[in-house]
Length: 178
Image 1 (tube, rainbow, N blue to C red):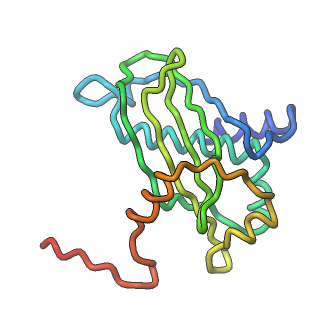
Image 2 (tube, helix red, strand yellow):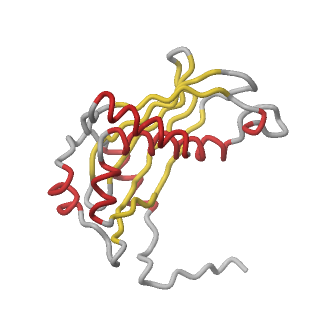
């Protein structure tokens, strides 16, 4: 994470900020620590690597520095992963990340794990911002500070976000399985 942050900061200084609609690309290689007992990349490892792509994007578009000054912290609130093919040890691939818009509560991003132009895995995430002082950053506040993102969110993503949403953290949500 530190290396991705340093590299993204260096690229931001060298090239200037990417547009909010820009695509971050990180080139990676499947390492022995990424592989599970079935000799392919562990499904949880994709999610950990996806953090790097989101981090690279928010630094390079200038959102990280801006939200830090405001005392805002990004928090992943939902994720939907679709696995299509497996990476094996030593394979090189790209992690592509872009913001696709905002809904009524969160920033929605799409991430793709790509090898030779072929999508191996796709991840859709929703990220909310919370204030260090307490409370949640509204979408109106976010647009006022960062600009408005074009809405390229497919309808199924809106449906997924709504149907998989859990109760507010202000409410108790009891598990009754046991």
